[in-house]
Image 1 (tube, helix red, strand yellow):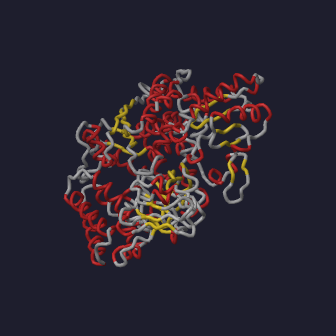
Image 2: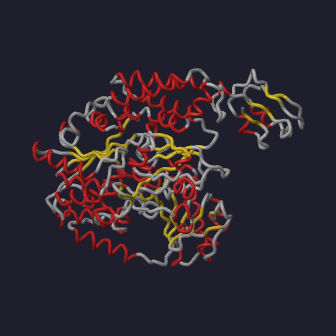
Amino acid sequence: MKAVFKQTEKSADIIPLNSYEDIKALKDKIIASKDPKKPVVAICFGTACAVNGSLEVKEALEKEIDEAGIEADIIPYIKATGCQGFCSRGPLVVIRPQGIFYQKVKAKDCKDIVEKTLKKGEPVKKLLYKDPKTGNEILTEKEIPFYKLQKRVVLKNIGTIDPCDINDYIGSGGYLALGKALTSMTPEHVVAEIEKSGLRGRGGAGFPTGRKWKSALLAIEKKGKPAYVVVNGDEGNPGAFLDMAIMEGDPHAVLEGLMIGAYAIGAENGYLYIRAEYPLAISKLEIAMEQARESGLMGKNILGSDFSFDARINRGAGAFVCGESTALFTSIEGKAGNPRPKYIRSVEEGLWGRPTVLNNIETWAAVPKIIEKGAEWYAGIGSYKNAGTKVFSLAGKINNAGLIEVPMGVPLSMIVEDIGGGVPGGEPFKAVQTGGPSGGCLPYKLKESPVDFDSLIKAGSMMGAGGMIVMDKRDCVVDVARHFLRFLEEESCGKCIPCRLGLTRMREILDNFSKGIGSKEDIEALESLAQAIQDGALCALGTSAPSPALSTIRHFKDEYLAHIEDKKCPAGVCKDLITYKIDSKLCTGCGSCKAQCPQQCISGEKKEPHIIDAEQCIRCGICMETCKFNAVTVY
């Protein structure tokens, strides 16, 4: 991973900014200094692309350009950007202004990129994206359905700017919203604008952001200062990586939103609580904060105003429960990250017992866009009571895995089938799990359901932070529910009895189902226990933990009954209920399954059908994964 961080060592030429006019003048200067015809090669340095060789691509491209002897006016500016979104196709390279999109680029491809594209203006066809439905090659990123069907607001800069260069952010309009707020808006006006926009917290609960800020103002009037603003960057949901991508790709947007919120409630200090497992995101934020301080955008009397603000980063130790607000506060305070009863809201008594506004990464990053373009603009995006856009990390059994942003209220089918490209093989998806381990699973029959806070709750799931995991027919819903219950059981702080004992008992019942043990009455007992946990748990981890089990029972009860009554796992996953067999008609006797079997329980002569000894088989599935002829079946 050391090589990945080399691109963060760049420092921008910092220009002190003493007024709103200084920001506008610097933006104009930056734009005027750029030749719109000069090529820019944007290389994705998001985590997924970086680990697949982005740094090697960048170094190879620089080397090929140096050796090519091309004319000065077409020597491109090579820009290391944040996540460009199409993670399953990385490393990604986009050549602008044409927007030529190259996928799965390797260092050995850079010579062709220089010789054909930069010198002659011709595409390197082998690197172009091919539409899986039509087979047609697509030249530009804007024509690719994955990008074409999105509406990027929070992600607008990510993939186009260098996150380590504050001037690149300012050149794209960055910090103008902060300047606008400080020079032409009162704190009350800022709060009213956020409230009017309809922005709801993107951390999962969907609480109206403006209402939270307004409540904090009222609390400060009663209790006085100090007050605090806090960033929740403790993204712990399996399958979710959107907050990480925003921090890595546009850290100044998070800081600008945080400072606008601090100005709105009169806070002089802020905290960014980031998972220690996100070292690249922390590095980018540290660079952005130092650049903001050097330019005068963070510190004393910002932009010549009476507003002073600074912030620090706190690293979370990886406890999932610290994503809950009160547990996060106690962790920052240096105590064990355990939740506490919420009989007093955090806007009244939060961090250090003072009025505190806590929002997640995506929420803070949306704030500058709202202040810049106005509440009416933002409220005009999305659906009723669900304004704006939502960022999702799309993962699982999906062709186009990656980072996406769509208006609130779009149908699930648009996300999974149109943007995501559907399930590999072209079959309908079985379920989509939303909301992380505390969310629910939505079946294919609900594919036209709107994706927004209220519709997902009605369907038995929730928005959560924005993770979305797609499942196909080979995924067992009983096993999925069991997996997430086990995760939440281990991550529970154990402070309250409903969570400490209830989740363990729920998981034990699901364990029995996976072994073919149980009855219909046990399903009813599971539902009753889930209700008790929801009613009695101390924090949101416990109250939402039963959702995976409840949603799968609601939408896939037949599969539960198959496990209990028929002693079968229809998906072929639960080891106690399946058997592997080799189809003699399809087996070519190649011996690949035999060579890979860890139990050595497959026998057969070369070029003759093979046989699996069911008694010795541990049902690991390696034989099925190895077989190229689909001869291994599970029943």
